[in-house]
Length: 150
Image (cartoon, rainbow, N blue to C red):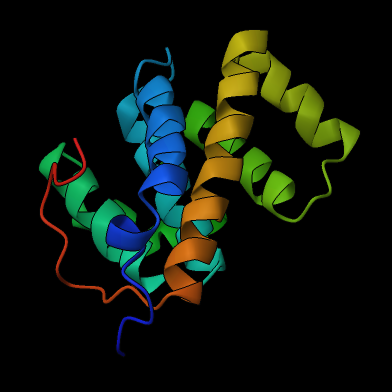
């Protein structure tokens, strides 16, 4: 796969805005490990190889296990995830599908504060944006280094 446009070089103004949102989300009270799981899961659904490479490396560097990453696409059938993680993954999949039924929303409200739900929703929207940018411009997976973007 060949990069179509180096978005980090040619789109600095647009990308700096996304980095600002990402920086805000890193300060969220939602645990970083959970955010990485959500980013990885949504990137699986959206088939973004660049983001899968990035978030697998970040997750592993932060102590995530390979077993949980390998089982993430079948998270409902595994015993590896906490209730909070399961709720976040169900909510993330629903938001990603643009269809959040009341039962999933109500369950999410039991595990997350209102501010955290806003942050989680913003995180899902942001990884969707990153996925689409990396897919559209064919950023090559495999080159990401842990901590590369701060």
